[in-house]
Amino acid sequence: MATTDTVLRPDHASRRRHFIFTEEHDQLRESIGSFVEKELQPHAQEWEESTFPNWVFQRMGELGFLGLSYPEEYGGQGGDYYCNLVLAEEMTKSNSGGLAMGVAVHTDMATPPIFLFGTEEQRQRYLVPAIKGEKISCLGITEPDAGSDVAGTKTRAVRDGDEYVINGAKTFITNAPRADFCVLVTKTDPDARHDGITLFIVDIRDSEGKEVEGFSVSRKLEKMGMHASDTGELSFQDVRVPAENLLGQEGKGFYHISWELQGERLVAAIGCVSGAERVFDRTLEYAKEREAFGRPIGKFQAIRHKFAEMSVKIEAAKQMVYATAWRFANGEYPVREITQAKLYASRIIEEVADDCIQIHGGYGYMKEYEVERAYRDSRLNRIGAGTDEVMLEVIGRSYGL
Ligand SMILES: Cc1cc2nc3c(=O)[nH]c(=O)nc-3n(C[C@H](O)[C@H](O)[C@H](O)COP(=O)(O)OP(=O)(O)OC[C@H]3O[C@@H](n4cnc5c(N)ncnc54)[C@H](O)[C@@H]3O)c2cc1C
Image (cartoon, rainbow, N blue to C red; front, side, top):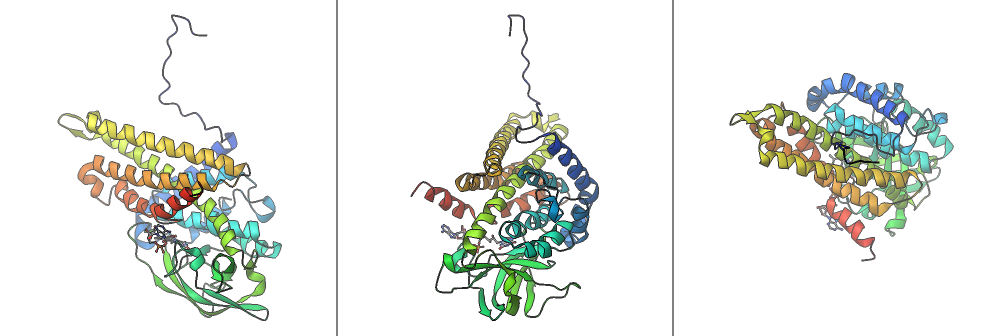
């Protein structure tokens, strides 16, 4: 109870753990963070030129980081959903959006549908080696003529005896130039829209890394940012896939992939928040050191207010994501909230990175400073995993409009 002589000191620098996390999450955070800082971050610049090497998957598999929330019977760590958030947050310490994205595609986009909708045999053949880092995965939704409009997918899968024959093209597919298998969105009924979509797990390379017959990466794409990731345009010409590789139910692929996109969006959102925090922290150090007119630039009100504005955005986005993750982890399917969090977090990281460049002045424009890369990498978030406009549509329609 306060008395008249009690002095209450504001706790500005509070670093109290958020209530969704436990001490075990802190330990996990510590171990992923130190791995990322020691083994990945030193290569960030080099991998901008060459893309990151495959050993990253093998090493992360050895350390158990590729299956944090999968059951132990599949080689996972048996953790809860929040462990995936911890991974996405700590991966931003690599200073490489492209690397974080390549890993997230594997852990939070391509493998979850195999766990949820796959048969036991599919889990053993694809999920188990993916968790070990022995097989790399990619997720093939987008096509040259169908991105936001997934129901407009043209890649065809036609049944032929015990097999399906696949023909079509995919584009902008992360990890495709290196992946062993692809979770592929196809059309099995060309006359139906949503109800004609079916997922397959397609082996795209053999054990020696050679492309299977009929499959090729027709183009490795050059990008504005995310340079450490590899992105490909894929061609399927009469690729034969055993019928047992159909994932989930025939004709229900649209609903399966819609579920997958929720996890993808939530992880993308926390990656944005954590990335924004990182670039904020680095810029804060800079603003305390860099001097102009005889004082640190952070002491100018114009700059101080930029930090204040950024901190509010980051905190708001973080609370949105954590609260939504809490719903998700407790069995809800909170599509509206996930979409709101993804939209907002994607916007704020771009705004924060832009302000951080401004605070760095000319140095912010130079490649040797982390903010330049963060700015380029951040731009993707308003497009990938669903564009801003599509997010607004989903949110608006959720109100019955
Ligand atoms: C670096 C990178 C990595 C990617 N990785 C993958 C991956 O691994 N796997 C994968 O499948 N895809 C991947 N994508 C693709 C990404 O998900 C798509 O680019 C995105 O969904 C948008 O599709 P689109 O590019 O075809 O744009 P379009 O759908 O053609 O949209 C073009 C414009 O029209 C707007 N628009 C479309 N529909 C509507 C509407 N109903 N209302 C209002 N506006 C609308 C869009 O918002 C956008 O502004 C990646 C993309 C990039 C750039």
